[in-house]
Amino acid sequence: MFTKMLTNKISYIPASNNRTRAVATNTSLSGKPPLSRSVSSPTSKLQMVQRGFVCALLASLLCALVAVSPITHAKEKTSFDVCWSIYVGWMPWGYGSDEGIVKKWADKYGIEIKVTQINDYIESINQYTVGQYDGCVMTNMDALTIPAAGGVDTTALIVGDFSNGNDAVILKGKDKLRDIKGQNVNLVELSVSHYLLARGLESVGMSERDVKVVNTSDADMVAAYTTRDVSAVVTWNPLVSEILAMPNSNKVFDSSQIPGEIIDLMVVNTEILKANPKLGKALTGAWYEIMATMSGPKAMADQAKSAMASASGTDLAGYQSQLASTRMFYQAADAVDFTNSAALKQTMEYVANFSFDHGLLGEGASDPSYIGILTPAGVYGSTSNIKLRFDPSFMQMAADGKL
Image (cartoon, rainbow, N blue to C red; front, side, top):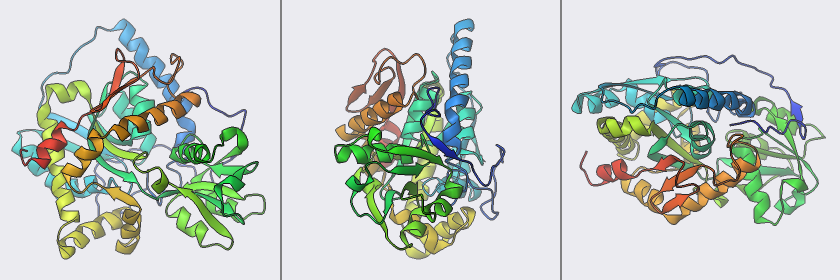
């Protein structure tokens, strides 16, 4: 996320629990690591507020390197590094690493894959973008505005899920979205909450000009809502559930009303994937073995989900609640259908427009179509500057039983 921050237009409530950016490798699912892009994390999405400055510098450095260095293509290799951060839809990666599922599939293709948990979601994307990792989990919006906008050609290898109610707009004492007009709205600026607000306002013929965004950390959201001055918030679970349990609180819009727009991915550097298709096959094979476990017989599924729940700081019931508002693609064929749909291209146009309007596509972007986004339904944006690709071919192999 890039340079044109809105600090001159917003108020800011500081985080109550700042955390330095730290990296932890292969934290065991039996432990309790600090949370990152987790629905129970106190600071994860707050980092999204700061990423504009970080990624502007990152993009400038990448462009400078390209200018002074000859362009090289990735070479075939046998050892790979991928990273993940804690979130309901990404817990399977930690489970797959701990249970040896990723290793089993890597061994099948004669390669090694090191799976690393990074405690800071945005830092994980930054490290992927500068080449520390061959693959990384991230949302569709972040894939566009960090690596793709930084010049790193990136492929969405696995479309794992989309938010289907995890994110919501909540009003105090009002029960219609139109009632938000003229109010201060507390949210984590430039996060998916900000995107959800923009889409919600659009649905009732309004825009951000009709409200005032108040940048608030997720750590402070519940406490802020209890004060007299705060009457509107946009946040995610489990904060949504906690706030809705308070008197006179009403959910007036949520991510189930924009299904398929907040998407969780495993992405891989395009050049590395081209040179090393075995990486794509091994990661995809491992993922759908885990999906089969999670959607299989109850005892087996509950055992796996319990491990994921413990690692994310909750219990099985809590993790099941999070999954209930997450549309997981347990079947590869469903993920392929979603990726092949024309709706995905339309979604990425929405995301590109939001990102451009908020200065997240970089200083060189003259319009929302500056970066090309390749989907099976066609390209949105510049065909000469394609930097984000949705490639369902490996998921199709899984669906066809050819991995």
